[in-house]
Image 1 (cartoon, rainbow, N blue to C red):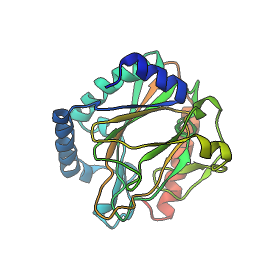
Image 2 (image 1 turned 120 degrees about the horizontal axis):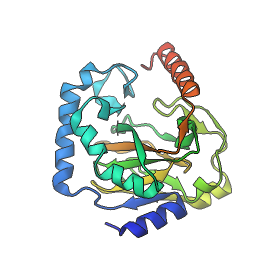
Image 3 (image 1 turned 30 degrees about the vertical axis):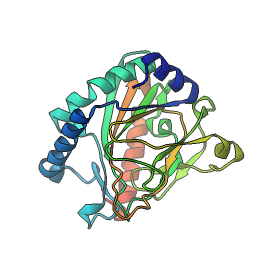
Length: 251
């Protein structure tokens, strides 16, 4: 694993950083076992706004679980351990744990994630927040690795429009400029590797084009204690989106 100073330097310079072997194999196996338990015991009791499927009639297409730390003590403790400590180092302040998510792009079903900035969803001032992405499987260009725009966190918020991608309802409308193409970095990952990006960093991922490989990951979202959330606007957006998704039959 990189030295802490190197991690901070890369994160501040590029808007993202890759930390290899953030969790050792033994801990990773424990996380996978606890994830299986969560899916068996807790998932059936969660509401439709917490669990997303590519095809809600097919349980094999599970793509996202929201707020796992609010439903289970193992994932609460996991979020508040190493990930929280690193988040405080990178943001330079105390943090508020906001979300622990499960992501997958199932083979044959996993769709592309549109280019976006997490800060657009967060509605914070200042936008002091970051997202961590822990690979549970080997991830490469075939099964949908993350692609970051280097130093895009320093260029402000870009225009977003509504997408049809469940779980990523907003995407950058003018993505694909010469600057975008020149600065996009492909980030493959091995199981246990951690990718961290600032909330203003532009990122995307292709779909899973493999026939047999999952692309499972855990996502951790932390807000800096200085960040103030526009709670009313956020709740109104959430309610509007959930209503639209229900009418479209997606949740």
